Every structure is written in structure tokens, then in C-alpha cells.
Image (cartoon, rainbow, N blue to C red):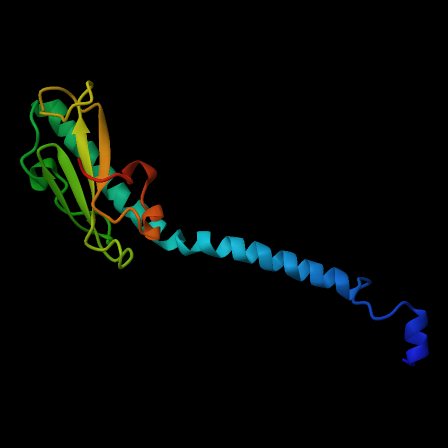
Length: 162
């Protein structure tokens, strides 16, 4: 095309849009990507922690059932029926004194070896002793809560042990 003909048609256009339009679209796409990447960085650790949380939930249900049936706390995870974690990201489950403690494994270097601990509470909010049914659970962790990866932990577990 001759330069004079291109000038008469209004300059270069791609699919009928000007280069300025395409630069604006590219800038918006860059902003959206910049906002999406940080939240995506926690997706995998959150998924792995959710898998561990599901294994802990299954054990907590067994412990609550044990207390309801036998009116006492189980001595250990085997007695509670949850000695084998149902997650490859749980290094092990420990049950003692109404506490279900799950060690994290292959989640993130900052979380590996740390635990999520669930304390059984009675209706009065006191640690369960087995004489009353388990009313709810309090979750704590020994993970560094100042580290950015702590955002991968469940919100109700982001508190240090008491």
C-alpha cells in the first residue's frame, strides 16, 4: 500500500482498532495478571492444608463419637480409630487428652513439620474431659503466623497454642 493511501485511510489499524486501544487492553491484562498471581501462589498450599484439615475432621468426628459412646476421652489415635491419616500431607495424627494434633508434611517448607491442633471443648467452652459431649473444637498451630504462608492455614487456626 502506498504511504499516501494509508494516510487517507486513517493509519494502521488491526481488526478495526487503533494501536492505542490495543495498548490499553494490554495494560489492563497486565494489571489483572499482577493481581491474580499472588493469590494463585497460595492455591497449592491451601489445597494441601485443606486435605490435612479433612483428615483431622474425620478424626475429630471419631473422637466425638468415642466420647459420646464411652463417656471418656480416647487414650491415643489408635483407640479413637484414626491412627492412619487419610492424607499424604499429614505426617501423623496424635490424639491425647481431647486434643487431635495433625503434623503437616510436604505442604510448604515453612509449614512442614508444623501442626494443626484441635482441642475438644465442652458446652461451657472448657477443654473436654470426656464426661460431657464434645460441643465444639478450638484450632491452634505452632506455625509462624508472621510468615506469608500462614495465609494458607484455615482462618480459625491462625492462633498460637494456649
